[in-house]
Length: 173
Image (cartoon, rainbow, N blue to C red; front, side, top):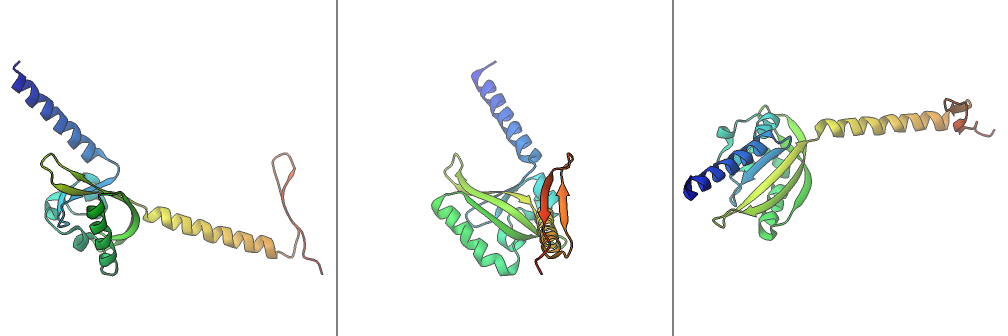
């Protein structure tokens, strides 16, 4: 096997490995250029937002995904990302194809390709349900605390061996 054929084969294997990782990622991956135009969009992004890769290629990521009231803020984050080439971590409401607003936890950075061009990279996860559950848990804890604190009767919570875990004494008259 000639050296050239071997190099081509290794390059092809490397590209296949990259594509597999990119498309099998459990996180949304979006690559965009300095003009904020989408260059790459993985399968999880298709699943999360509802658009196919071919439908979003070349579109402005902010115009496509960000609600109007957040566009300026997110555009500033993107500009700082490119200026400093740093890692950004933020939570933002985003739009889906069907008009729903979902909340995504996002990690952004930039990278340079072999030709020296800089691209933005966003890894995101839909945390909408997680946030809803956290809110419900806090509300439940607040209700429990109110019931426990203001109860006119003695409340005792025991462990499986009958030892006192928590005791609410009756308010003094």
